[in-house]
Amino acid sequence: MNVNAIMMKKERLNKNFLNDFQFYDFTKIKENKIFLVGSIRFKDYFIKIESILQIIYKKLVGICSVDGLLNKDKFNEEEWDKLQEIAIQKLNDQDAILVLDVDNYIGEQSKEEIEYFSSHLHKPIYYLSKLKIG
Image: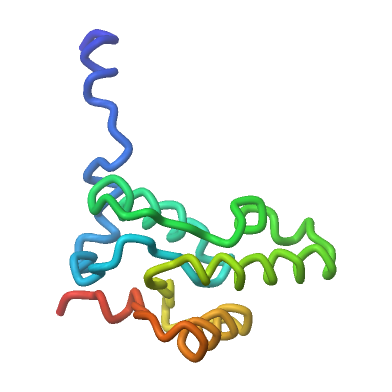
């Protein structure tokens, strides 16, 4: 196979990439601006679901902080608290949130974001576990 043929086949959302998410029904998310909420330990889910929702479903996807997602351990407590404050502010501009409750885990900071979104904004909250088919 020549280099041009290899380059033409290159695509991010290939079968291997999508395999982990084939049993999720993202069509249930009707809103356009979606904020991803979840534990840093599932950063691969953030990265992949962001691409899936944006490229396949044409959603505007937001997260608290890319740097925070990739480098949480490098922030001191004050810096991290400021990022959390910003996350709450960003929630105000969202149509819905998608909670990445992998293995049914939801961390304390995620619970705060969910509570704020639910009690103050009264907008839809989706859970990845509930989007699973079957």
